[in-house]
Each structure stands twice: as structure tokens, then as C-alpha cells.
Length: 465
Image 1 (cartoon, one colour):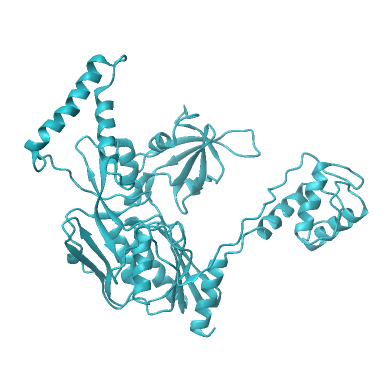
Image 2 (cartoon, helix red, strand yellow):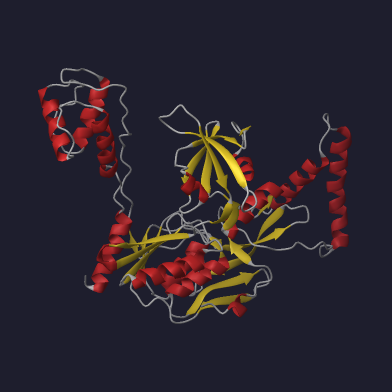
């Protein structure tokens, strides 16, 4: 594993695109050349005084100070440096730590409501029966309509072992679902994995939070134990994370040598390295335009060391390191303090990592949504519902007209579908048929992952399978 003595950065540095955090402490000291700056600070204080005393409306001083602080950081012109108010900062800390006390559910705002994106596997939310698409309407009896998702998250989180009551609405039901769920420590997955055809192990690294190295280590061990003879590491859509975690993951894939070089404003270079033994299997790493920062550190290191094949599309192109510092009032500062370079001293900032094998994803196709019927239909019916049924049967390969008429040809197709699906052959379009039809249409419309297919093809060639 990585020699941690070599990673002694002044503050734990992180590479961030949209998330992850580290811990730092801002010290209160006079800036260099403070006497020369006094006049310029006087201007700032003078404006603050004028706004306080003469602006037409009474202003909150803290709000003015926060705005000035935010403007100060924005003035660097660096899109990756930012000031964050306490609530934003806490969310970032939780995301980067990879664990918190709660029920284990991803949520997002949709229209005026908070919708469950997905429960995390094995968490209290999943065990209680929370499902993707559920709408949360109350938390502990409090109406949360129009409430921001971060505030709802604060209500749901709490101390381990305490209980929270949530009220859900579920599609297809008019009755609210009331659940009382006991909070637990939630470990946010950084990665998931499975075995693919041909003894190919597959690991999807979603982000480089503090759990990433641990989980990828577990994944590799489990996949090897199951007989994996090669490996795909999928970094597509991975926005980045902790530098230390990207080094840890790269260390699992490389035999030894430099993973990344970081250089500060004074030109001081520090090299972070991997140690033997490495992966020992043929490797493909998948990237795309959503692979950024820490993802690019891993992909760049694999590419420079020729430890595997990079497949997909050019990565995002973010080659700067942010140090994050907690300020005394609980707010935080994310400030670019270093630039990073691949082992061969390539800068990917604004350029990205070019794949060894470029593969475009499958073009987006128009999808047929799940069908719902308010009634059953017998032969002879004419309806827009029947037109929808005909379109879906045609997608599955049944030959019939698309005219909305439940005529003889459509009845014959319905009967064949019922027989093929091991349903009662009634010749009617009923709820059971529609449920089965929806399931098969969804499977048929699943997009082909052309990039993963190429990775599998490359690994089969390397292993002779």
C-alpha cells in the first residue's frame, strides 16, 4: 500500500469537482504585507459601513460579511475555489466522510416534493420498505412540501439508535405510508462490483470518499476469490474525491512507482507513489467526460505506467488540488493550492485524459414509458390505449398493425404474447398482460453499454477466452 509518510501534506489535500471534503483548520493571522494592505481593507470596511448606515433597507451584517467573503474567493477567477456557508459545509463533510447516522436514502427535489432516488442497500430505509420513486411528505409529523432537500436531510438524520417517523406517498396508491425507522450509522458506498461473463471482474467506483480504498480492496479480493482473471474499473461519471483515496486505489492497480506529482505555488514538488505488488491481472479502466480530478489521477497513472487500457471518452480535465479549511463559525473555504501532474509529468488541466481506445456510447433512443390501463379491453375495442399496446408488442417483435383497433391481427399477437409469457391465453388486454408487457419492454429498451462491451472484448483477447 501507499507509504503514508510520503503523503504528509500540510492539510489533507483533496481533488474536488462537485463533492468530497477534508479537514483543515484556518488560522487567524495577519496576511503578509499587512501594512500595505491596510488601505485596501479600509476601502472594504468603508463600503460595509456605508451599506449598514445608508442602504434603503436594514441589512443583516452577517449576510453582508458572507457575501463579501464569497466575492473575495470568486475574485480569484478559479471555478474550483469557493466559500461555503455552514450548512453547505456540513453537507460536504458528510458526503466526503462516507458515513453518517441516518436511515440510508438518497433523496432529491422534484417539483415541490422530496423524492426518494434510491435507498442504500442494507440500510434501515431499505429494510423498512422504502422504494425508489416514493415521495416523502412528512418527517416526524412535519409537512416538508416546498422544503429544500438539504433541510429534509437534516430532519431525517440524527443520533444512531434514535427513531424517525416518515410519511410516504407511493405511485398507484392514495393511502399514505407511515414508517418509524431506527437510525443507524450509514456507510455511503464508494464502489460496487460484480462478476461478468468470461471471469471478468467489474468494479464501479462512484466517488473517492473515505471508503473508496477500503471498498475497492474488498472488491478485488472477492472477485479474485470468485475466479476473476481480468478486471474492469469503471470511473465514468466519477467526479473525484480525496487525493489520498485516489492514491490508495491506484496503489491496488499499479505494481509500483509514481501515481501523481503535486506542485505548489513555490514550485515545490511532492511525488505520491504506489508500492508493490499491484493488481496482477489484465486491466481496463473506463472513463468519460464526467470522470474528473481523482478519477483522472487514477486513469492517468494507469495509462503512464501502461498497467491497463483506458477505454471510453476523454475525461473532464481538472488538474488542480483544493485544500479545504473549516473556519471558526462552521463555514468552510475550498481553495486551490496545488496543481497535479501524471507520473510522466503530463498536465491534464483543461485537456483531460485521452482514452487509448475511444468508444462512443450508444445514441439515446426514444423510450416507451410504462403503460397503465384504467380498464381491460376485449377484441373489437378502439382506443389510444390499444395503440400504446400495439407499439409495445411491435417493439418486442410481434407483427401487428399500429392503428388503435383491437382487430384479428392484434388479437393474434396478444394471444402469442400471452403464450410466450406463460400467461393465461385469453386474447384480452388485461392488467396482468400489461404488467408483463411493461417488464419486457423495459428490458428490451435497456441501452447497450458499448464502452463496457469494448472493455470485455479487449480483456477476452488478453486472456484468450
